[in-house]
Length: 238
Image (cartoon, rainbow, N blue to C red; front, side, top):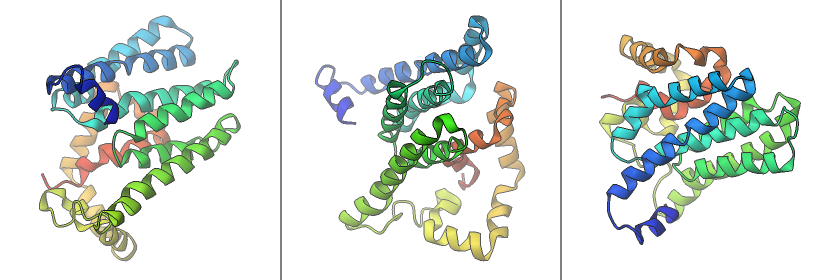
């Protein structure tokens, strides 16, 4: 947000946010192309996946639905995944690890709950030996970010942790607050399951995955990392 504020000195117009969001989101096609090219060893397939990313309705709708800082995190998270994948190849070294951490750091600056995404990505990459070292650092950075955003800053601001959405009926389960949700998961998980296991949510998941041919099922553990940001639509009341 500080960097965006500096850009406002050059062009003090709300349209700056829309242009910036479009440029950054479109730039996500670059790590998608590089990742597909590296895995499939084909420039053609790299272009196919880059175009598929740009044509995905979820990406286009996120860009058209006003400005949201979390939308910018998409490109930075894709870059994080690309550099993590590059660690297993030849020529990887300290510079690639630095790029992993820098990409993740930029993603964390976009919104509070991105820390959960980065943490899950770190957990998935603890298994491969080539990425284990940087995964620990990613996890530590994500935990520090979550602690800062959800504990320290609310306390310093005189708010209860998680108080921002408590009592808001539009938030569904999220409106109960983190403490109440944890108690439900332990004492009566069926309430959470009944909320999630609905026709509306199944249709939402299908619509989200269908345009990319359900490719997310190829790596369900990594796909689970998107739950903190994309899964919010499963528990909202509206």
